[in-house]
Length: 165
Ligand SMILES: [Zn+2]
Image (cartoon, rainbow, N blue to C red):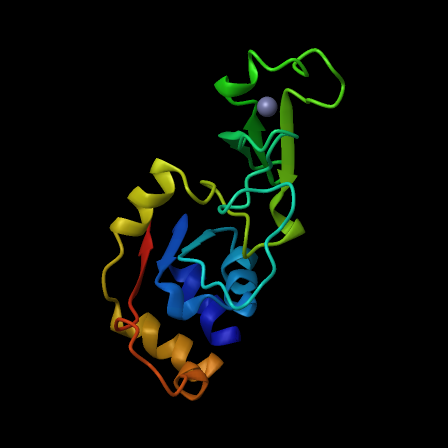
């Protein structure tokens, strides 16, 4: 673990973009401990659907419109979501049931919440910049022994990761 932290700190990177093969909570925690954000495809593992959230974990209104990601506040580590357009004509718009802004602390669940938020264009852009950095892969494999975690039906694409400044 210390090796990774040192490795992380030697770069001043903002995002750690990795594929779904790295979607494990200790990795998010490690990335976060160096104040970066993990951009990792979510690997749904027979998890129940969350009521009140869309497939990218954005909060939804009572009529199931997903709130739109607006910004990240680094001081409070919160993602700000705003009420979507679809809600403007909603009869509940003036009701207290329908809040204008929704703030989500990323530490609620680092796997689900990172900046930029999952499902956004900017999240996809960061993810796209991912390219192989073997040195970092070696660290991660060594410390988390991901090779041993591999499942029988390992048809997933080769794992790659990169640090983006
Ligand atoms: Zn609504």
